[in-house]
Every structure is written in C-alpha cells, then in structure tokens.
Image (cartoon, rainbow, N blue to C red; front, side, top):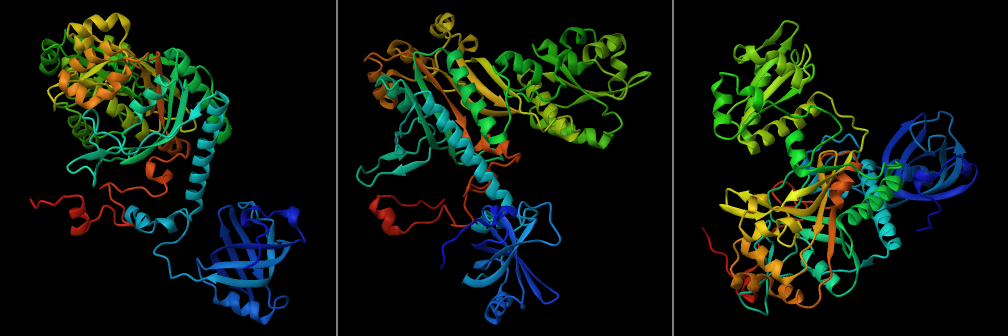
Length: 587
C-alpha cells in the first residue's frame, strides 16, 4: 500500500499535472465509450477517476473492470482538467487519469445505496450504521459536532476552566428519571448507578477549590425516548464558584457565540433576551418557547365572563382560564376534518375539546360563533385577528390551557411555514418555580434538582411549606423551541439543604442515606457556586438542521432503546449472572 498524498475531496485545479495517490471507496462506476469512470469517495468528498485503455496498462484496465460499489481502492494518477465540469463538486473541474489501480478490499452489495437521499428505514440504517455513516451528509454532521466541541473547549480553556472527569459508577438517587443500575460483583446485593449528570461531583469540586470546572460528560437516563432524546447522551457541563447567575449566563453566552461563529459563521447578538418562566408559560404555553414566530396565547378570561358558553363559564368558575391563539390565514386551509385532528391533538394535552371560529369580512363563523356576539369586536381586537384567520380556544386549568395551546402553536407554526428556519433565536428562561406538582407521585418535586438555590426572600415560604410560591435561582437556555441546557445557583449551606430535602418529603434518615456525603461536605466551608449543562447532542442536532438526535450520535439507540447493529441489550449467561448472584425471574 502506498502513502496517500491527498484526500479525494480536496483535489482541485491547483494540483493540475501533478501525480497523486488517493484511497477510498468506489461510490460509482460506469463505462462510456471504452473508458471506465470511477467516483472515489472518502471523508472529504468525491473525485472522478478515468481509466483510459490508451493510457493505462491492460492490468489496470482489467482491475478497473472488476470494481463494484463500496470496494476499497488505491489509485495513483495524474490530475487533469475535466472536459465537462461539475459545478456541484469542489473537485468538479478536474479528474485523475489512473495509471495504477489496486483493490484493497471488496464489498458485498450493500443493503441500501450510500447516498444522502437514501430510502432505507431507520432500523435498517441503524442495523448497518457503519454503512450509514459513510453517507456524506452524516460525515458532515460529525465534522460539525467536532467543531462544536472544539470551539467550546477552546473558549472554556481561555476562561481558565479545568477539565475534570467525574465517576461513571455512582450511587443511585431517587430524584429525576430512572437510573441505569450496575450490579456489584464484590458487594453482593449492591448496585452502582450510571450518572444522570455529574451534578454532585462538580459541586464537590467547587468545595475542593477548583473554582472553574468543565467536562464533556457522558450521562445516562432510563426514560421514554423521542426524537431529541437518547438513553445515553453528552453534555457540556460547567460549574463555577463566586459568580452570580447573570455572570454565569454571560460566560455561557460567550461560549455559545464562539461556537456559532466557528461552526456556522454567524455573529449572534449578545446578550440573549431574558424571559421569566411565568411570562413564557403565559405568552407561549411553553417553558422553551420558539420565538421565531408569533401566534402568542391571548388571555380572554376577563371578556369570557360575559359569554353564556358553558365550557368557558365552567372553566372560569373552577379557577381556570380561557385563552386563544390566532392562526393567520388558516380559515380556508383547515377543513372541519382538519380541525377534528387538531381537537384530537388537544385532548392528548389534557383538554376536553377545542373550540374554534373562523374570521370573515362579515364577522366570525363556527360552532361557538353564536355565543360570542357581545364580545366579538373586543375578541377580534385582543387577538389582532383579520379576515381569513382562525381562532382556537382552550378553557381549562392554567396548566392544561398552556400545554394545549402551546403544543398546537408549535405544530401549526411548522405546518403553515411560519418559522424562519434560517434563524437561531436564543433565549434565557429565568426565575423558575422551585417545585412542580407530580400527579403520579402526589407530591411536589424539584423542577430542576434538589440542590437548586431558592431566592433569599422565598426561604421563609420553604419553611412554611408554601412550596407552590417558592422560586429558584434557576435558568434555562432555549434555542428555537428546544431546551438547550439548564443551570442554577446551588445551595451551599447544610441548614438550607436539609430544609430542601425535608420539603421534598425526605426524612432525616433518608437524606443522610442518599446524600450524606454531600451534607457532610457542606460542613466544610462550601463556597457560593453555580453552573450549567448544555446538551451537546441537541445543540449539534439543531445546528445540523435535523430534527432527530440520532443523526448526530455515531451509534445511537432506536425508539425501543436497543441497538439493531450489536443487538444490545442482550441476554447474558447464567454463569455471568451467577458471579453477580443474580437471577432472572420469569413473569
């Protein structure tokens, strides 16, 4: 095997009349008028090779005739100008006249074509992931991801952060998603947990005086999957001492600005806008609002009091809300059947139905139009509705109204093409509630995690068990409707941390059992500190302009949290289970 002189995709007119050696995969082979044309692909792109019987030896021609798609080859030849140029390729102005062709390895017929417009199913792509990753689009995704990580590392290094690895084998804690458990062979009946985040360890590093920590951290959560979630994921994890929430946000903005410049060539405007959590929920029905388009929620509770429509009046009597979104120029586009589908979607968010009207030059039409007579003009004014628009109403609890209209807003924004896909709208959502009510657990749980610092003025509410009104020094960074990351200032006194555990329903014994090592550390001069974690996979997904996180993870799991390629998870032998003193119980 010869030494490669160039990547295929980097050979341009500057190499004319030079002899080069390339190595790569046969993307395409065709015979035209006695000439053999080959497209050879490597990670940098494609170059055309021509085997001319008048210039190449019989052996070279014979070898070229044997080539099939995805054979691995080594080709040496002279770079010449192409007679018919291909402006779509960086290498489109040249070709290589081959004088040596060697087959390095052959290939069976692949289960799908290695092209960007593949029609292979998701599971087939994952089953043959090593082939799927050959596609140029996928290679570009991972170059982008690499640039993202490199830019973040360089920025944090310049800001005096120290890269520290934290343990993968941790102690299981009950808060948050389900843990992935790892049985211990040495400690019978005991289990490690894979980290959902390095949270406690990075706080302990602040207690150790490291001042500024970061890590490109692998994390694990045993939860239901969707397009932007995986059971194992990577985050850019930060923690700092002696900084305010605003200072941490400014640092994060600087890192993101560096990433956007180096990865996308975009100068983002700093600082990013700030929006209170309560405002985000009120205006957008979401704690991660996509601000690239309008269609904000309009509160109609006050004027709805004057409407004799039982759905509205019942919701208001029970302390709920009536809100609407104005869907621009949707009246003609959405039939009754289409609206029925929207109603079905609304019920998935907990709504009992979906009221609607269409706006015409003469007024409003639709099932509830007859109830709106007295308030029609005020309604249209509040919603800024014009002829051709459609109004969708939700009347229920504050939470259900927000979830319903917020979910429909996002869906309709995409369906109607209201979103400028070229925009990157960053937003801080700040001043979060400390707790959220869990119907499943029938108790308050941490909105972020139990180490978040409440606002000083709300500590008394914590002591009085007024948990619904406790707010936290917490902040999320949102990009185009995705939660990109989240962080907070942390509790740094034992007294307050114990109060927090008590508010969450921990007994003193349970708190010591689960978090005793942290509580003990809080006795030894813990500095004020705070931090943030950015989802690296999700950030790469957005920058790569894809809506599935699998496209930026080299070897992801499918929707069933399994790997069709390696067949993980798999059954293990009785001998392996015996070493761990475990057995599988058949249901």
